[in-house]
Image (cartoon, rainbow, N blue to C red; front, side, top):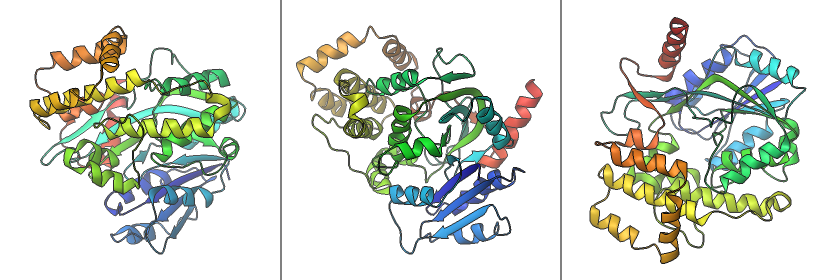
Length: 384
């Protein structure tokens, strides 16, 4: 088997049909779609059954709900492909994906991983009630040092991981923008999916163990943001606890500040990464200055879009000690910091959508991810 597409799902029946169709409607035969029904109580079983005539579909169900991490690992261990792709039940794979990846695998002599770009589709009410649809093109804003199609050696991959410890994220951290080889998965000791964010730990672990990796500046997916996505819980201020329960995570470490759970959980998985890969990360430390800066930016953003009061903001700022304030002042010389600060103070009307999602545009007349994929493909054809 050349490709395994992993699809663990928990009560995502409303979106699942579009996701499965995006994989199975492709004519490529040398692949399998592994769907794990995590004791779902919605229409998921009916949706899966509607695709049962396709021999590429392999579905199984747990007797009782398991954690996100266990669900992901169960799906991986049920697969057999030489290359593995993890997709969410509210995501979408664009046509021609497998043929393109197969050509790259042959061209670069079976690399350990391939990274590419895509689009983001934010469904109605994913951010707040009565909100329209939005989209981002591209999904991820790669730095200028990602110049074009290129094969990365181990030292470049290690550099990307080391930058994570400075909260400088140079590649998307979720799974869909990356294709992984079974070889590199097997080089990671133990389960590759671990809390708090299974995709983040897995990707960085494999980049530390990879011999080669290919970057492709093309768009091959649509990542969906829906009311059931973890991002919905993070950015809906009253639901962060529910989001943590959804993933079964706990964010606790020395020096933790209140604020963005994505930043706090990044600190947690960076510590876990260092613990599990001492041969690569012995002298690498999590940047306290950049951690504090990200949380302060989050506090200010919350105040600007009305989630906290000025009194609450001042109370949060009062938690910083003298050295942390000095670090904030010194960090202003950083170009990315200046750009973020300039954006924060010059946008007169702050909104959650522009605060938390790169390049989000309002999208009228589109109500689901399949409609969006058709729209964006037609748009690209017309623009050529």
